[in-house]
Structures are given as structure tokens and as C-alpha cells.
Image 1: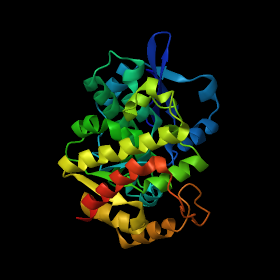
Image 2: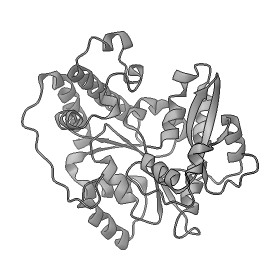
Image 3: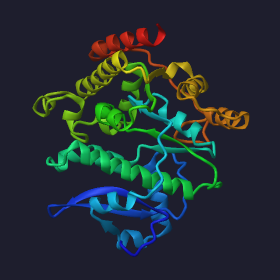
Image 4: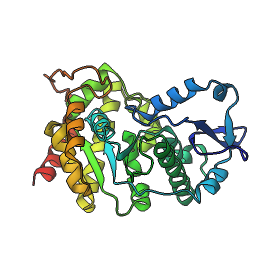
Length: 324
């Protein structure tokens, strides 16, 4: 890739092949990063040029870090954590309606980097941090060159995968002064949503159970419901631990409503949003997070499974901290 102009290129996945870690690159062709999930942006870019599938551009990760050294870096305005199915996708979509914002929602290569120690145990936290900042620079630059107004200064929002909550310590070290937003919802509603349409974290073995604090051997004996309940317990327990010691964290509950949540995020992050952008965000809030043309309509949970007793207790404790 040495001779390729990197203006629109981003690193989009890390793969271990034949005892070597490889970084795969994608030409975005100026595609705006506005999809609900970054994986959808990747698919759009690959469809534009199928040669990228047959003849992928590849480098080693060290080269990515070297190329990133001279790139502009925009410190994120906020990092949005969530326990899944709690409105974070809609909030990130609302933020993305403004030309002033770059929203990086669940970027696959960020996940590859954070979970790298499972593939490469010898890689230390410092290297993982350097790789993450390098990848972030390329994604910021890719979003910037794809924008309608390239001269306009941008704000960057990172929406993590839900399990990145358990990388809080590493992310706080990388972003010591950045507001962290902790979004959540009642465990019974999250549980019901995953039972209707399972997410990766709700299926045993798709994500390393150690990330959630679950012993891999114990996992084998868990029913799907008990496993998901344990994951939710650990999410809420970690939230309680974090807010007890980190004053740069903001708790927001799904039940506050998308506009109220966004107003709290804007105030906490000290960002100014124009009246025009507030209207765009309000209009987007009326529709389904993952189906922008479909009005939002949600069923109510009637019964709480007994396996969620501990998770509900942790949720009430968290609510006490939010409301105090």
C-alpha cells in the first residue's frame, strides 16, 4: 500500500493469518458515515468497488501507526457507552443529522483492536492504545473528507460496542478529559429485546465470556436466559462502580426520552447545537433507530423473568445514583 494515496482509505479490520497480524484497508470514496452501524457503511463502500473484495489492500498494524503520525487528531466530544437496546443507536443517529458532527458508531476495527489481546496475548496495553488512536485518526479524516463542508470544524462522537464498557480503564487512560456517557435501560426490556432479536453479547461464545467476567467453563452449564441475565448483571455492576469514582461520567436512562437525553449530553459535553440542528434531531427522534423511514412503536414488558432479580436490584441502585 506504500504507493496508494490514503485520502479516503480507512483501516477496517485486523485479521491474524499464518501467525501474522494484518490490517485490511478500505477506500470509502468519500462515503458519509451516517449509517446506524459502521458495518453498514463498510458494506456500502465495498459494493462501490468490488475489486476491493478480490484484491484487498493490506498492511501490517505498525505501518498504520506510522502513517497516522502526521494526521490531524480531533479529541472526541464524548464517548457513548451503552448496555444495548437502550436508545444509543437513535441518539447517535440524531447526532449524525448535524454536518458539524462525526459519529463513529460501533466501528469494527476499534473492536478488533480492543479485543486484540485474545488473538495476540503478547500485545501490551500501550500498543493497543496507539493502534486505537491511529485507527481513530483515519476514521476522523475519512469522515471529514466525505463531508459536505470540509472546512467546517467537526465534533467527534464515538459510540462503542456495548461490551467496550469492560475496557473502561483503557479508554479512560486514552481519553482522560473526555465526557463518558453511560446509557442504560431496565434489564427486563433489554432482555426481551435480545430474546426477540439476539445481539452478539447475548449468545454464548460469540464474544469472549471473560470480557463479561464470566468463566468460560461455567458458561457451558448456563442456559441462554441465565447467561444473558449474567451479562446484564455485569453491565450494571460495572456502571455502578464507574459512576462511584468518575465525575466525568453521565448516567442517562432510556425512559428519559431521546430529546431529553440529547439535551443532557450536549450540556454535559459543553457543546452548542443550533436551532436548525435541534429541529433535525427532533425530526429524526420520531422514527425507528435502525429503520429511519418507520415510525417508532414499542411493546411494553408485562412480566419480569426471575433470573433478572439481581440485575433489577443493580438497576434500581443505579437509578438512585442518577436521580440523587
